[in-house]
Image (cartoon, rainbow, N blue to C red; front, side, top):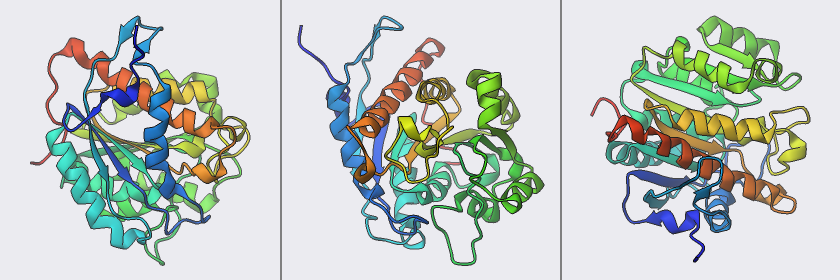
Length: 302
């Protein structure tokens, strides 16, 4: 039988959307995160649509909306283009996959999910709080602080996978003061990612729609060389995939992003294939929603 790849699911229209945001400027550590969207698209050719774990073949249409023209732009200048492109996608599709770019794309993406930030929930899988100061404007190290300053309530934020020796006491203090819920990588390993995600979703029961930021540097550096912020002792890649599948199955999740993947740092295509597998897991998670009936676009406040 002919091999059907995940890349074959890309089309001009579909229930799901794929959007690139190749932003690399404004990074704490300069790199080439702008190369990620096209690298991920190429990697999708390596994956079959058949999931041996479930015995199901994915039969989804993924509308590829191309890339937002933000390469070389600072985050402040790229804010409106990303927000508007995401808004168009979330208004027309049940789930949007946004491929960054650095983590600065998460702030405009959250605004694109709906105009009312108090009704939006944010879940991050990240080694970092992303609570650096904003005195020099938005950058990849402060999207969570920026969103809080924009009006996102701290109780609408759940941060999973925080790493030791990768943050400051001030960041931790400010996240706690804002009311954010946080789980360290040790807690993830001890309690299991499914239990933590269930708890996070329960804490976000009051919101209307959820964005999940999958900062790829949450993964252990030995399993993910292509991220400047990844460190030894991070999240096992199998746990990252399990989190992707579980969160994409949640009907309130209307937008997921993959950030901080730098193809220029990759070794043996490990990171490229990890990013490609993330797409597969998101699609598989979304596919499991089918038993709940047809899904409506997840954008809010339209």
